[in-house]
Amino acid sequence: MIKTTDMLLEELKSYANPKSKLSRMVKNGEVFPIVKGLYETDRNTPAHLLAGSIYGPSYISFEYALSFYGMIPEAVYTVTCATFEKKKKKRYETAFGTFTYRDIPSEAFPQGIRIMKDGDYYYRIATPEKALCDKLYTVKPVANSAQMKTLLLDDLRIDEDELGKLDLGEIERMAGSYHSTNITKLCTTLRRLRNERSN
Image 1 (tube, one colour):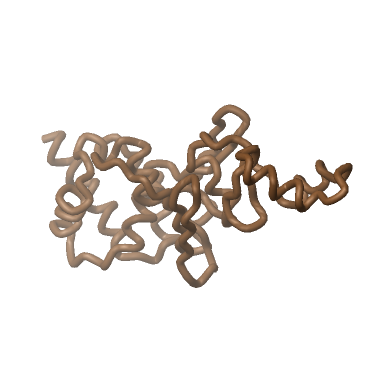
Image 2 (tube, rainbow, N blue to C red):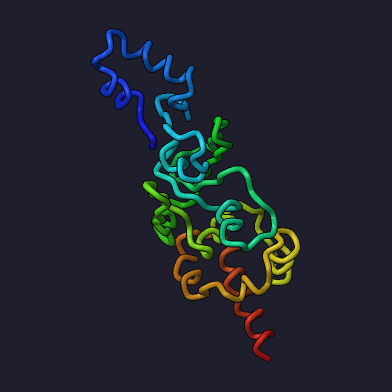
């Protein structure tokens, strides 16, 4: 369970020196620091369950979400998260893993997010469509649909069958929120790929 310093000190208030007791608990492996002011009581908690508590508002997206859904073949060990209006990227190296946070447009931020439950933990993660849009937003703009196809299939190594499963309507609904030529070209490319497969 995630707990703040204040929560733990409140629980330890019967001790003569709650801060010293907390320090001993950390030393003895009874609680585990995540980042300043935040602790986890279970050392084996998967990193992605902690991401939203470390820095927010945020949700899991980009490469980690694409890997989570099996859209890319690589395992991704850094938990990559989307934020908005933070102005600069954030990176946290913790005992539980590495977490990165980067902005997407504030207009796009609330769209395409799933709330997932894992045991006693809830976490927010982009839909496959949103994770791909977020990723393409951060990539240098491509010139045309042919380059977008190369980017998707060769550079990002996204499985073509997985692209075929995406909800094109959802991507088209979100596209205007990004003001990104990459997202516009993604819609065009997906339509062309579907036409090619159906002919």
